[in-house]
Image (cartoon, rainbow, N blue to C red; front, side, top):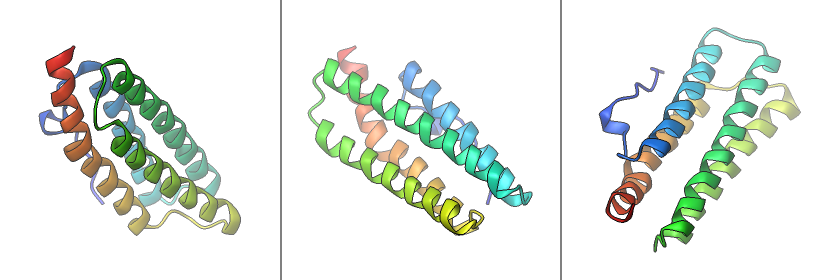
Length: 133
């Protein structure tokens, strides 16, 4: 699995959200490298916890902006957020309960979701914000 490389293609054009996304991509890449390097389950759990906490904070940040600027797609966007958090917490529970390492397919699933969400829902939201901010 390759790193996610931050670039203009991932930018939604709103600096404060792009900065959040850069942080999420960085933590994802740390997790990806740690899995490849065979890091301990405890370390992987700590990185995954950091990714979850940062993601929850970021989603709260986006949702606050949605409310502030009257975004009509708020409920659908929030539902996507809740689905990702659910998926990541399920992965976390799998790791904690069975002392299982994060599998490559888990990393690939996280990568697809993160980039897919940015490319679709967040780009749409960014376009809206660019018009109203």
